[in-house]
Image 1: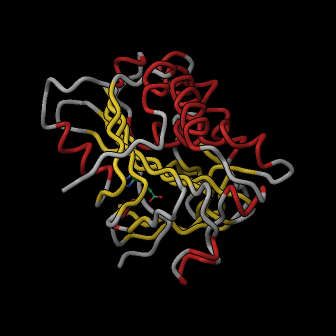
Image 2: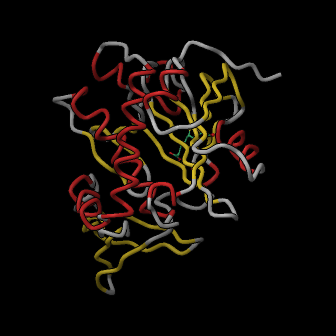
Length: 261
Ligand code: BTN
């Protein structure tokens, strides 16, 4: 049986952020899956925040799994983009908007470390992954935005294959980060970025490029089995990855930087 727990201050989150409902679990397979179940109810009160202290089957993009260490943030937000005057433009601008919100939440906390965007959906600090975003669009247009943020665990506690590739807020600052405060700040920045995506997309879009950490790198983008190699020229205002390829400048709005399995 799934058990809801009380160590996050749920009433404060409801009172002080835009969310209308919160489900907080000690453990779930995946908050993304629980939000999908909730989405099967067309009358669900939105925005709904589903948060879990542990995930036993957390999901990333492209069929990857997502590790949720103790004290980290793992949540999924079920919402209607119209509520933020935001068009249904899920990929890649919505993921990037959420990544910018994460950056705006944590940048000051981790100074002097530099944080940036790793297209299409990651937040990186000095070459290591701090957070990931997963956006899924339901057939009726409602969105599920999943966020995993490595907060209070340590990279050393992660599975061996992740230890050298990830970083946590605790690793960077040496201190614990109170999860209610961190989450409320993140939801506030998320609301700001979603509204900006709706109202001033080019202003937000310029930030995608400013924050991109892949400028100048040679990247291989896979669309299905088809690889395209090019030097990264940044991120376009609509979220497209700009590559200088053998056939000239191209913008990509889908694809993965991982080789197909
Ligand atoms: C990625 O980097 O590939 C995206 C990771 C998204 C992970 C979050 S954690 C909360 C939500 N529940 C999941 O199962 N996945 C997302």
